[in-house]
Length: 419
Length: 195
Image (tube, rainbow over all chains, first blue to last red; front, side, top):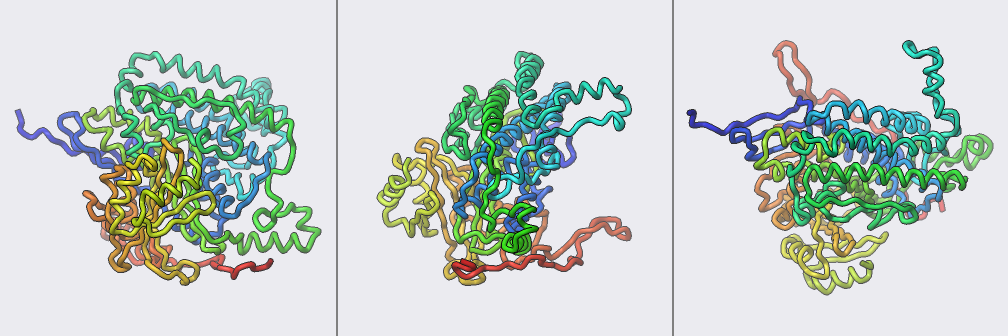
């Protein structure tokens, strides 16, 4: 028998379950974790400092690149902070569009989380299943903003433009392996407007979630890997700064959409699922139910948006650009356009904190302006940051393989943690 | 909880520990002197009228360039956002570090464990020392990084760049070769500019 039993193990930075770039130094006793020391910052780009050198509008696309699987939710918190400082009223239709896309983003995020979490702990099929549905939602992103990932769709004062009347189609000429008939079938739900397409998705989606659940919820291996792993008590979850599904999984019914409603969430009907045990399995169940609830919200937004046309961005041209037609015909609008895109808007002096219920937890923006055309200080409060900080406490006493399950349940994306 | 009630509660409970309180944009900001920060933090968490169980955010702040240099007062500040889940309210706490050359604030890690990484980050980016923090290492920047990158006197393009040197067959640091450029100048307009 050898005397030395303690190892120090480097987990990452190139490890498939590290969800990007994480180096974690694990101190082990046999296979049991004694201490976990995550070294983050390998993706640190200094977004907050960069934003100090950009006008308020130029910093919007940086927000997409924080949590790059829930792009629009990040933008949402940022534009909300600007609107709060400006005291700006957002048109009601824009608020509904924002909620619609926040929920689409939540489904997108949870689908990626489910696929990756499954893949990490051995349920490989999940990834293929969830990416099938993600594809449709990515097409919605593309249809509305032109980009599948980095949308830059939310703008201070509203959204960039109204929902399109057509959906992009698959082109038979570009499809090498599909027959013309197969392509026509793929395009069959893309003949109407974008709202028709989303409604079709909403109709199909609950059956898809059922399908995922048949693969996992009662699966013996899945339960062995998640039940009783990473248990957090409600008091400890609050003290550690956990938010979102991490907090609700421990049984704390806290959701900003209900408790501190923003946009039009107070007019919508949805439920907040909470867990009981506070382990990985409960957090899995919470997120699965959240997808179903998001689906309900999307349906309500679609119904409202069909009936109520209107402007989608404020008519205050100090903040939002005038339409192209007006800009070409009217001297004053031309000046507004020129000033907005050269100097940018001036946000009144002050500070504010705006938070949204991001798919991963509470995503907040602390914005300080000294009255200039650029932020004086922008602090991004990323949910994943506190979750990652809790890793040490949660991993102690678990096996190495459970660290991977914990990474999955945290829903780690390094874009937001490292900023 | 209504903001007015919260403001009243903060005033009565914290009493002379409160160095300033203001209410703007539906948010309450309080200022605490660095010497009384820990005591006040304990009260903020435990007092039945306040009960801020969660530390949402903690960040450093460098006021040296604020409003093109019209800032009077201490340069560094630690801004904490607290959330009370039981009372459903938030408060922002500002603690200005007394010494500009050696900014130092007590660590709140014993009161809110969530402060751990936030304080490491503020130390890394602003060089604020958190007394009592058990593990105050750099968090986001590179191993062996020199300087505090988020201070206003630190250039955006940094001081060093990294490249692979084929002769030495390793990655080396060298002074930056790019020049900082400013496409849109930063402008603070006087009040009521342009109506």
